[in-house]
Image 1 (tube, helix red, strand yellow):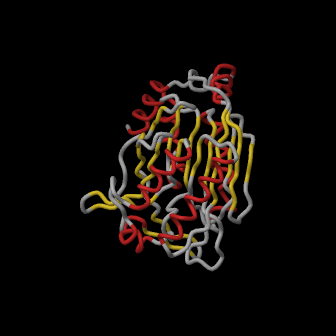
Image 2 (cartoon, rainbow, N blue to C red):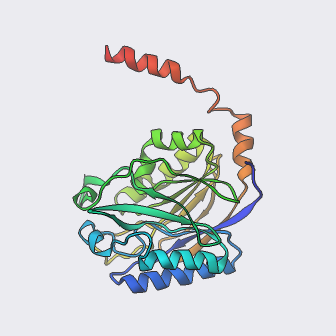
Length: 280
């Protein structure tokens, strides 16, 4: 599905410890992005609450019915845009997930992605245990839109090449990644990881970060970014609150895959044989 050229927007939102303010601010940025001509709008990871594992259950919502989710659906319909609602804490029974909800321009839910890889790390000056309050998703997220074939991952998911390759093999042309890298991992890996996944899988990558707040307990890196299938940065934000736009030509992914056919040249049978041999 080559698709026509369209504009997307990344809303690098300043997130505070006030759910209503975050929701209202996100709604305003979506409307501004639509007014700029964007047909696809993307919010950052955990955009309705501070990024603190202990807070996720108290901010969690169930679909349908949550106030954040109602805002996303109604704003997508009101502005006539495809909307990747960053991610929010989603409650399903007794479990809470880090979930991205994707809505169409009629306000209908097109799909959701539950973060598959939980961020449990011990870094210099930073310890995070998402698993202390979150469960892990188990499904690949590929969504057909009227613009392109869209894949969705959330933050830490991007570090697992196997997952992104599966999405590429499913025909994804644009990978959307709401992501809150921090001031340790951001300067070291943000640019490298997202550009690397774009090149390895010959797809567009749009990474949407929260704005940086130096006073927050968890300081996001910012630098929301759009990368093309050749690894070129089409647009990059600084650290503050902003709306970043870029033009996406889905046909470019197909063209590059045709001229440099990495996916066709894979030898999975040989890889499996090598893996079995090494086990023995």
